[in-house]
Structure formats: structure tokens, C-alpha cells
Image 1: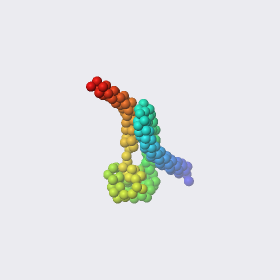
Image 2: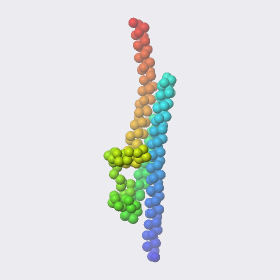
Image 3: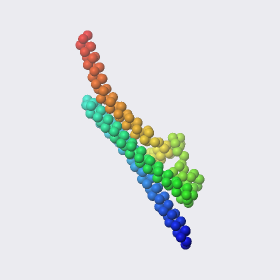
Length: 194
């Protein structure tokens, strides 16, 4: 073997190792994102339960603090998820760049047979594809695949709106209680006056 062939083989081995590492990193960050969505849902249920208890016991100020705190938690969770999503997307992009250098040699048989290009984008995605899949496979075990096919951006649909809603509700609960008490005071005063 010549020096040039040895250098090319070493470069190829390095790219293959980088390819495997990028795939593992992207899949790891995918799992982190999905776990953050589960955490967000559990946090939402906890906050709703705590609010129901606090408001039922007349603790509006504490309920407002809980809502404001949950809004902050959702903002931090959103910022963290955005960073993880960017890192995941960069890892997938690195993997795709290596695939382009090697051609079809790195693609699995399934994706090569589909002639679809990138491993990540081989399936048709969107709400329509998720709906069609749900109609063909009406089973609870298919929910993760349906969610993946829907390709929903949970940052836009769950985390950010929940943070904003928490802040708005914290102000509404805080001042809403004062407004209700004021209305009750004036209605009681009018009833006594009449």
C-alpha cells in the first residue's frame, strides 16, 4: 500500500467513526427532547393540581406565585430544549454531510431501496401522514410513531405557550382575586345602602 492509500483509508476510518458518533449523539438528543416533553406534561399536571388546591383554599397569592414559578420553569425548559434541538440538528446535518461524501455506501438497505436520500427524511411526515397511519393502525402502541410522523414542534405547541399562559394567569389570579373582592365589597355596600 502506498502512503496515499494509507492516508485515504485513515481518513475514511475517521469519517466513519465521526458518522457513528454523530448518529449516536443525534439519537441521544432525540431521547432528551422527548423526555423534556414528558417532563413538561407532568409539570403541567402538577401545577394544575396545585392551583386547584390553592384556589379552593383561598390562597390566591400563593397560587399566583406557583403560576409565575411554573412560567419560569417552562422558560428554562424551553431554552434548554432549544439548545438540545440545535445540537441534535447539527449532529444529523454532520451525518448527512458524511453520507454525501460516501454516497449510498452508508445508507441502510431500506432507505437506499426507497431512493429517498437522507436516512432522517425518508418517511413522509406531517399531520396528514400521521392521520393516515392512525387510520391504518388504530392501536395505542402506535402513538409514538404517530407523534413522530406528525413531526410536531413541541417547543412551539407546548413549552412556549404554557410559559406565556402561566405568566398571564399568575397576574390574573393575583389581581382577579382583588377585583372579585372589590366587586363583592361594593355589592355588599349597595345591598346595605338599599
